[in-house]
Amino acid sequence: MSNTTSSRPRRRRSYSATGSRRNGRAGGRPQRHTRGGGRGKRVQPTFNPSQFINTTPVAVEEVVYKPKHTFGSFGLDKRVTTVLSKNGIDTPSPIQDQIIPEILAGHDVIGLAETGTGKTAAFLLPLITKTLAEYRRQTLILTPTRELAIQIEQELKKFTMNARLYFTTCVGGTPIGPQIGRLKRKNHFVIGTPGRIKDLIERGAFRTDQVSTVVLDEADRMLDMGFIHDMRSILSTTPAQRETLFFSATMSPTIEKLVHEFLRDPVTVSVKKTDVTNSIKQDVVRYEAHHKYDTLLTLLSKSAAKRVIIFGAMKHGVQKLADQLNTDGIKAQAIHGNKSHGQRQQALRAFKSGNAQVLVATDVAARGIHVDKVSHVINYDMPATFEDYVHRIGRTGRGSEQGEALTFVPA
Image (cartoon, rainbow, N blue to C red):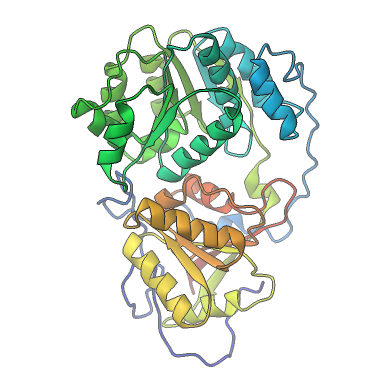
């Protein structure tokens, strides 16, 4: 795709995903939110995306990992291995191969791994096995977003289809009443976002004194979203002798402090994926005053733009942009903090099925979105940090797929 504007006539609108109509200053300053879609101070980008232009990405040759175990040799419950075999899951991924024995042994663990490494199964499979052996066990799984919680629930359903285990998912954006009702019965697994779980604990609807294991999934994102106080509050109500499984894509000094606070003598397993910034085609799109939106339309009209995720900074701007694209004949869906859980799931289904060409999303709402064959990621509003940039563009070029990332920059 070219990064030049087209002469194709269009109505001269210049919309930013920050929501306002602009006078040649499209792009705006992105927002950093302290909670999912909540209020926050505007933050200037801390990097220049032009530094990461890469029109000839490196064709990365994947190193073949040779696992030391098979799913049959871990000591997993037979009901679990039967499901794995039926689903054609035969060989453990690197993180599964290294971390499953540690969890089965009862160790606290730190898993340094990104999405797409098989980390969900890496903690679910041994925990299911331990629960089947000790039926009174209860596991609490904390995740940063509703979407990730639902994905974990779906994996749990798949792996426990031969077992009588019970679980419930408690997330914001959905009525709390039914969740309170489900928590009155026995649940072997409770999956939830920190804000909703804390609310349920404070209401007396969820007693955590019998929790055996706490899983903190994507802990770095929970920290970024301002959930640290909720996490501390929740863990303070659980038994001191619990097992804690900590998963994060990064290990910053703040994350290290959390590790010392929450875990006891943890075993660390690090699985680093290929540097995404080297393997994805990247370029900037320079736009002139009043022509930002027209430039976007031109890009989306290209035949290569088959499945596109557009990132904006603010939720109301994301919705406006999606609405305008639909008005101009481009099927688009939006995901942001003002959408209910059902609406977000519906938008994702439309995008995954091909009924929508474009998904417009905020950074926070997009966490946990894993869609194959995304042809392009477009940073319509610049991300605030390099870490956010890497997270965004990692939605494309997954595995052996080819992908392209474009960032809008004022001319």
